[in-house]
Amino acid sequence: MAILLSQIVFIEEQAAGIGKSAKIVVHLHPAPPNKEPGPFQSSKNSYIKLSFKEHGQIEFYRRLSEEMTQRRWENMPVSQSLQTNRGPQPGRIRAVGIVGIERKLEEKRKETDKNISEAFEDLSKLMIKAKEMVELSKSIANKIKDKQGDITEDETIRFKSYLLSMGIANPVTRETYGSGTQYHMQLAKQLAGILQVPLEERGGIMSLTEVYCLVNRARGMELLSPEDLVNACKMLEALKLPLRLRVFDSGVMVIELQSHKEEEMVASALETVSEKGSLTSEEFAKLVGMSVLLAKERLLLAEKMGHLCRDDSVEGLRFYPNLFMTQS
Amino acid sequence: MAMSFEWPWQYRFPPFFTLQPNVDTRQKQLAAWCSLVLSFCRLHKQSSMTVMEAQESPLFNNVKLQRKLPVESIQIVLEELRKKGNLEWLDKSKSSFLIMWRRPEEWGKLIYQWVSRSGQNNSIFTLYELTNGEDTEDEEFHGLDEATLLRALQALQQEHKAEIITVSDGRAAVASLLRLVLDPS
Image (cartoon, rainbow over all chains, first blue to last red; front, side, top):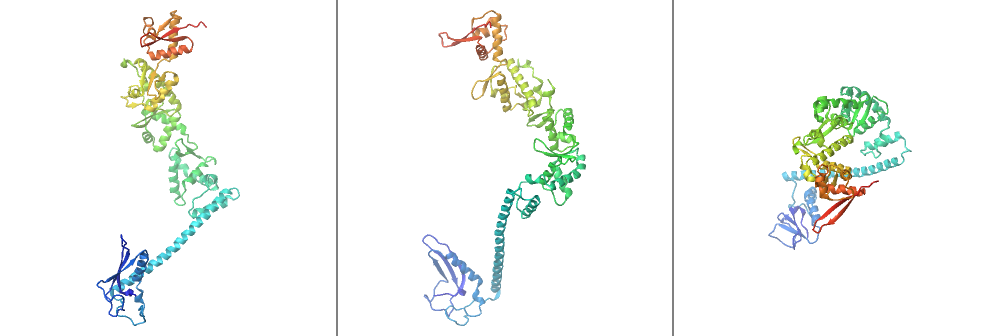
């Protein structure tokens, strides 16, 4: 018992319900006159229902849909009668007109789809490989970490650069290798050259963020990372360069000219504050022509040295001359 | 009486109401607070206070300056006073305290000096006599509050210079008596 696929107009799913099994409804063309004899000679319905008692409905539907899309029976010039090798049957649907064009487009789409899936298949294979590579690199990096003494600095740097180019974070901390390298030493000397004039222009002191922006703007390409900048700056004093890195109690980092004496600046800050009675960091910054960040650090240093005291209220943080010490 | 109270210069200095981070500055600040609290309480004859009262009192709240000492800093000032012997907490939760502008030992000394001066060694006094009797009118401890007096006498007792005797006089009240012993050594 069989029905030609070419008889099918349209198929749809009917979900299972209570007491009802899942079904596929197959809408059919009218039967051709030379229809093979079957269980029924005719039916008032133009569809049949396939009932799936347990499962298999999804798979069957999928395959049937595929066949419906591919319409392979149309591509075959020879008759595909299921029963015998008869001649082409007038009931067959031919690929003509708009319908035919649509079908061809559909086919092409399917083909493209298939190609893309295949391509992605390669990518997912690549990704699996990449994962393996990452694991391998990590294990090598760990071995390096363990054998720190045995591997030369040069090789380590080379290997680390390979890791970096593969986008793997460096497992060895900057501190162990970062601070003392040739690179940072050279960089420190370079910085001393670049920063001399800007520092003089800014009263001998600049915050590290200002330095970072200035230096990277000047470089244009091959920008410095913050870590490299800090590590180079840490070497300034050791290399006896005319600048130094200074870290305030608050954690703010600045570059100072060696000749710059922040403590002396504090004395002048005290004068300024005394003249005005009291000042906030912003007011002081404006008066002196400094960035607010550095102004605040100077006032805090003055407070630490006992020259100023603070008034902290809803009105804000103001600094006063330290009358607790100077007055009886 | 409040009007005759002279506020110290710090009271009009805004930083006075901010606990100073610089350790040396803070020391001076706390010393100034302690002496302000004691002189304020002395003038206002205030021997005890709650922390709530203190927060709102003009002592810690300078309305004109628009500055208040925050409660955590008030606690620090009170702790300083306690360490110096001028303050005693009256309850476990530290909500109210006894404030003594003179330390109990100092009061004890004054009382003892008066006794030996007036040749009343070995006499017995009621507490009331000491603080409200005619004989003591000219003395500094005249009018002293009972809580502080008791502590002063306890300090003397510690030094074996006095003995506090508790007597029931038949009525429900219990009186404390004092016998002062002048120790020749």
